Image 1 (cartoon, helix red, strand yellow):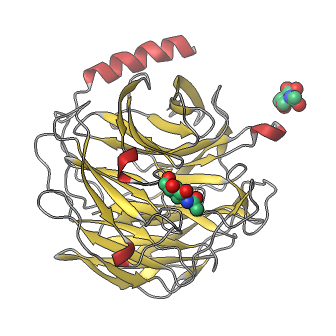
Image 2 (tube, rainbow, N blue to C red; image 1 turned 45 degrees about the vertical axis):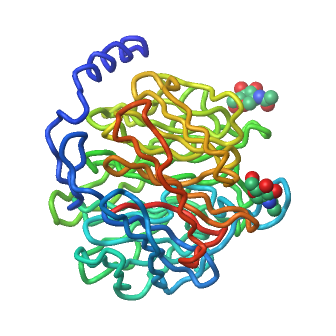
Length: 413
Ligand SMILES: *[C@@H]1O[C@H](CO)[C@@H](O)[C@H](O)[C@H]1NC(C)=O
Ligand SMILES: *[C@@H]1O[C@H](CO)[C@@H](O)[C@H](O)[C@H]1NC(C)=O
C-alpha cells in the first residue's frame, strides 16, 4: 500500500472513532477510562532512582489532586546516565527514557539501573500507596535497564537495557513473582555503562494496544549520521495466561524524517503510534500489522523546543500531550495529524521543564524531577473540559515524599 493510500485509509478509519463512545475496554484490570464514565485514578507512581532505589506512591484525591505519599524500596540501586554535553551524571532525565516503571494488573515493575535488575511489587487495591516487594529483584542479561513494559494478557514483562550490553530481555510473571529472564536480544549499538546520552540509547519499551507485539524506540545520533529506529517484536504463543514468549528477532525501521525517537503511546483503536522525537517535536507513525514496519504518517515541529521526549494520550480530550525537559509547558497535539492544538505555559510554577507524564480520567500528571535547586514536583492539569481546556490545578512538591532530581517514570493506578 502506498503511503498516500495508507494515509486515506487511516484517516477514514480514525474519523470513525469517537473517543468516549468506543466500546469500554477493561484491560490489565485497570479502571475503564473514557470521557463519560471512568473510575478516578487512585495513585501515581514513579521511581526515586536514588542509590537505594524506591517506588514513590502518591495518592490522588477525589478532586484529582495529590497528597503526601509513601516510598517502598525496590531492593536495587538507581543510576544516572552521563550527560554527553557536560560529562556529568544526568539529572533531570537521569535515565534518558520513558516508562522506568509500569503497571499490569495489581503489579508494578520497576528498573534498577545501577544493579542491572528488575523488581516486582504488588499494589494493595484498597490502599494503593501500600506496596509490597514480591520476591527478589531478578538479574538482567543487559546493563543499565531504563525502561520496562508489561503485558497482563501474556504474563510477560520486558526490559530495555541501554548500556555497553544493550537490548531487550523478558521474564514471565505471576502473583508469585518473576521468573528468571530469557536471553538478550541485542540492539547492537556501541555504548558504555553507564551510557553517555541522551542520543544513541534505548528510549522506551511498550506493548501494542492488543499486546500482540512489543515496540521499542531507539534514539540515533544525528551528529554522527546514526539514525534511530522503531523496533517491533511479535509475541509468540500465549493467549490468556498461557505461556507466551517474545520473538528472538525484531523488525527495525526508521520512519522518514525521524531521528531521535523517544517516548510514545499507542493511539487507541488504530495500529498507529504517537511518538516524540527529541530533535523536532512529535509525529504519528503507522505500524503495519502485516510487515511490522513503521512509516511516518504525520510530523510536527514544535517551535522553541529543546527536547520533546515524553508523551501520553488522554481519552477525555482524544489528543496527545507532550513534555520537554528544558521548556516548562504542556503541548497538546492531534492524533490525526500531529498538529499543535494547545500550549499550556507552566513557567510561573518554577520548574525547569517536565519529563514523564500520564493522563488519567479528567487529569494529567506530569513529573519535573527539578535540578537539585528546584524540588521534584508533579504538575496536575485538569482537562475535563476536553481538548484545549488544559489548566494547572496543583503543583505538588515531592521533596516531602523523599523524591529528588534523579526521579523518573510515571505509572497510574
Ligand atoms: C549518512 O548515512 C546515509 C545512509 O547510510 C548515507 O546515504 C549518507 O551518505 C550519510 N551521510 C553522511 C554525511 O555521511
Ligand atoms: C534550576 O531550574 C531553575 C528554574 O528553571 C533555574 O532558575 C536554575 O538556574 C536551575 N539550576 C540549575 C543548577 O540548573
